[in-house]
Image (cartoon, rainbow over all chains, first blue to last red; front, top):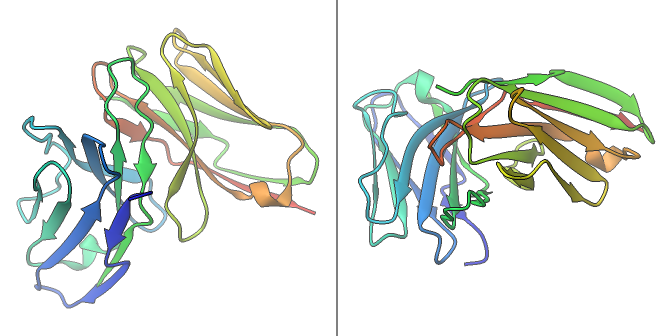
Length: 116
Length: 112
């Protein structure tokens, strides 16, 4: 597609439920990033996928968080047993990996998660 | 681990002023530095990317500079307009990484 697409745009869930957030990156972009932005906070890195390499999961805050990327394209971020502190905007970005360092990130509009 | 600091945290100026937003970072062995804009309730829009071999980039009224040795970048906005009101974010990867660390941003208001 022309841009990075994320769904749902808004999700309200009850504490303890599982949620899945989807990211459809720009066609041909090999790199995909997940960040989250809590109210009044900066962007917090979660996970990074690059081609067929093992993902960098160093930013995942707990084992309740996981992500996968199927076929090198669509990615799903799953949060199990949601807690109120998981409430945030989850942002996905993709880029065309370039060894020169010219990897401009294109962000989606985000998925706003509210845990009651 | 890269740490990114942006100053000022907030700025309110009258239309027409020239502005300088500052970004500092701790790990200078970087591939690039990016400036983004975020409008309320929206995602991020890339403004400028400076590769490590470059010292500045320009796009319209925006000019970004990079001084790797001192760990600093500035975003210069010429002749500010109310439509420039947004939060401006600086993003810098750690040395050897392509994963940007973001600053907390500068919230800019340009009033008519």
